Length: 312
Length: 312
Image (tube, rainbow over all chains, first blue to last red; front, side, top):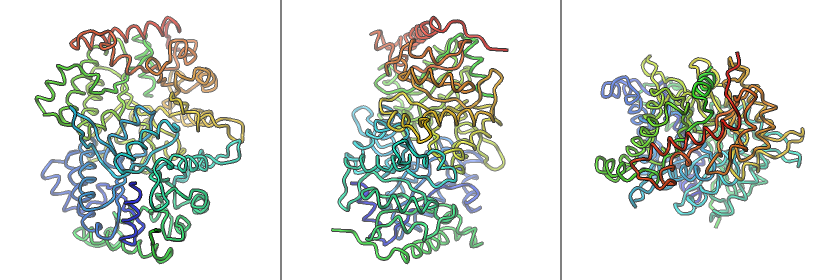
């Protein structure tokens, strides 16, 4: 199962983190912008080229120490189809460098349409009898508001193609509780219900290290819920946003891990992307600064959780 | 407000329906496929070209009688960035023909990222001080699982650009009740809570006909809930999927309308897209068959709800 590949990468690199590729033009060094805009004009195409060049530099600098990247679809869609092309090329480049790619698209729809999203982001699309890849990430974030028939098409694509999904359970943003923390008449909260769904859906994608191919998104900004969910969802691997710029630290993410130092992958986006600006170093050093921050983050978390071991 | 433009289009054409542009290669006549594949090869680019040619024919045939189209993003993303380019070109073509375009993307994320989706689909993206349009639809479907801070960035983009959103409330699929029908400890259901949110969010985008810029998606397959929500959400305009292929008929959608024949726009996708196959007519007649089905659907619904009047 696909989540196994992520876990193997985490253990091999002793690094339970993922670099969020949420590029903004404001994060990109001037020399990259200048070259892209000279080549393609001050256009969406020029901007998209700059994103791609910037991402490739980051991937080159991170791929031997960070197991995964998480491009956020919104930051590519805002540059139109040209940006979406840069997303596809970023995914392909990161996978070619051995990284596990989680497309953060939070896709959701009814069954027939979810089948199309599953083909788009994880599977293949048939054209004239040929199976062509559209985006071909390793995993996709999804939203379960529509219930099981909006999730099931993903499960069969995951099983066939060795891929995974992460379902939104308890998100990192300030207003996530408006719906997710509401208590149902049965006593459980909405996020607990959704967490339970992940365990159920995951039964169809069992993994060899105890975690299924159906993971959950649980924010570092809610450490109590992270702790609770780690205990109640033993087969559900967590994608944990909210570390760094959103306020979460190593203590906040520690409850997401089990006794083997497994159980979660922690995302940092702005912390890594803007490291060169925070360090006030030259733009030419942006990738080296990103690597320094990735190492700092890895060391901070691993110091807290200890050695990462894959169970037999 | 943007929803006003939709209502004006509905009244002018006396047609409360929207054509869902969810194209599949299997729906496209052979002569279009042949030409696109000859031009671009049996590739994603060839498939995307066929989608666009097919859509343009539909839009030409429908634009004087149907006020709106709803392209479903998934059916474009499955053809990669090339498909997404066809989506952008479809949106631009339909708007140039005077149609109101609802991108069915069900986007959702935390505030900062939702800002990027809002720019992508409804607003503009700044590149070197210039405001460029990426997809530029009139409205976008969104998922409110993350709460208010995932919706608010859309509201300011809508206010600035005269655009609207439709929030998933009670979706048309069989398993929509798994979460949406669950009763909260306070007594209301999850879909009622989300419906109430639409009224609250909509206060920031009031419209001149009583309906705000924040609409709701409520499926024709649940007519009792449609009836209930029409009564409890007086300022929320409904986008109603589930008519036709999913099983809903004119009686099922009738409760979505108010005494002026306003209150909802009913979507049909497969019914219109595959009309030529259902009629067993020649592929060359696909657009004419789509128009016949659109007229049949319009007449069926209008016979049930009566004349559509814009209140003063």
